[in-house]
Length: 306
Image 1 (tube, rainbow, N blue to C red):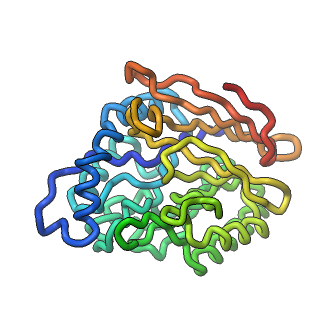
Image 2: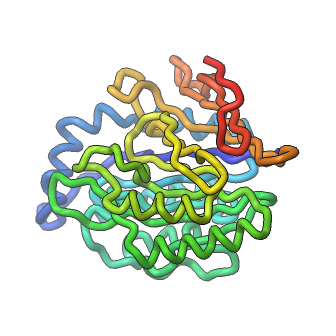
């Protein structure tokens, strides 16, 4: 069995900022962090999640965005060091979230610092957004990374893939389907048409139309800071769409305690069998404990345990 750890939205601690760094949208985000969000995201909670991931020794780690908060230069540098401690670029795959693209920045000074974690197999460190969709093969699994992060006006946390990226992803997924790999799509925004208009993926309907045509085995996302499961139509049945709680969520926060998902993937007789184990931070912060299990056989849930 191949095991994939999925975490998202670590929202690493905000550094102090200079006044000149807070022009435009960053000012509202900075104020909101110190007034509200600093109590929702705890570095000690994130440390407990990371410690448990290390103890579980997954085959690979998938991180679906929002490492930073308002895209300050110092945030990207700090996140780069945190990623290096989490694992090597061969062990960890990263895609951006909307907070990683909070405002327009120079790639080299921002996401370029994580370029080796974003790039597809055999590629140099990612040099711009044109690398998406990315592709990494790990054992029987193909990780297809998408970017839904686009700078938006204040008070909007929406995402957009764009026609070109959706079309390119469709071609990649179609080719991978012929290879018989388990196709895992990584995206930050949930690709659902039922989300709030202030936080939604604006072209979710177009993404779903592509998936209905070419299929995949599972979609992983973040953004909502909740462990949640939805389904979208695929060519051979429903495809699970799985979101995960923020990896730094404080136990008393509105999101509940921090979580990550440990996903077991193995080939069944007729379809891929995917086991989703939810791991939640213990009350004392020392690692995690089981918080539910769901098993999918070819997209349909086979079992559910509390």
